[in-house]
Length: 134
Image 1: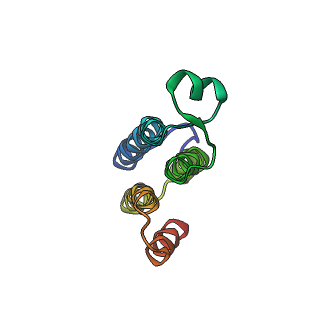
Image 2 (image 1 turned 60 degrees about the vertical axis):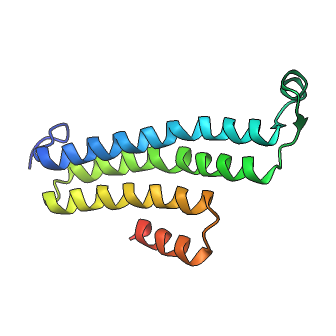
């Protein structure tokens, strides 16, 4: 067994880095989407913003909240992925298993956001959740 600070499988680590990068980009992309929905619906979180930008104070606008919740979900779950993935890599799993796990999680996060933003029925979201929890 190698040191915990050494990752012996370059293929698994490359997959972790690629999937991690895609997840970070996805999380960062959610902020401009939230801003777009705020401007589209003219629903701002503070009186100062509403006054300056010609809108109304509304923290419960459905379209804005839908995007904001998807972003919040990423902020809550993606750091956990990084921590768990590094622990998983330290355990030196078979390369195919690590690559499959990282890709599955990444695809399921993108699907989760797509389903949430497009109001896809709960059956599809439940299937997505089942894949992420396995």
